[in-house]
Length: 284
Image 1 (cartoon, rainbow, N blue to C red):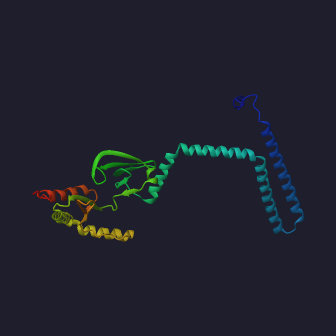
Image 2: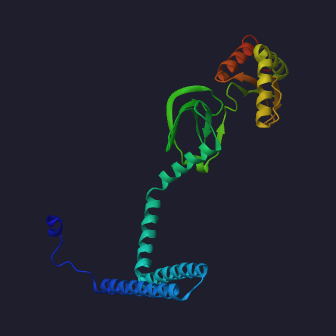
Image 3: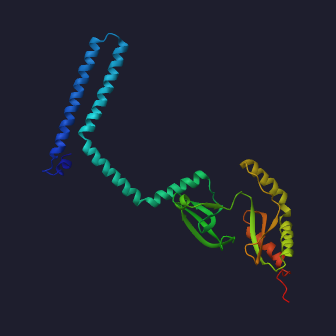
């Protein structure tokens, strides 16, 4: 105890302004205590009704408490104001210094509350696309899938995405369901090519590859639609025509596939259609 006192500087002293504030506070507290004691004594001696006496004691006690709080606020107002400004400045500096961390935590809360995706889902945020393998409070780790937005091959690279991106950027979840998905890919042709035959061949190949599990997918999608209150589109394979340019025809193939087999089914259909047939225009 003596050692702790010895470390205090010998010339330590409070400023005069602090002394005045402490003395004013002491006098205020003493005045409130004396007035409360006298008032309570007067009420107990002169008020006959017990109910009215109890109500008056409680009201005067609360009134003197409020008076004390107001008096302290008036006495220490300048110091409280200075302290509040200091706290605000420290809070602003803290927020600026930890802005990215706060955004990451906010992004984690946002994607968790919205149920944006789960482990194993294939997602895309900005130019980052891959399968989710880990989630923390600050970042989400994905195995990159590519090349581009239409590829389905894992590149072997790991991408760590800060959760702050989920606050300002939309998230595309390519794994709508847990077991079966719709897969879409496009085959471009020139307008003079024999794209009519290619359309028929693509539809036949897609139907043949989907035939073993088509009824299972239909039942599963109907169940998902009923659970989520959605109108599920037809699960039958289809090939639609698009004309992005005057000289081009694109055939867009859409078919149901098992999760994780998009690339396999796509390559199998393309290999079957283009293995022995050349759909390009015949040169004169």
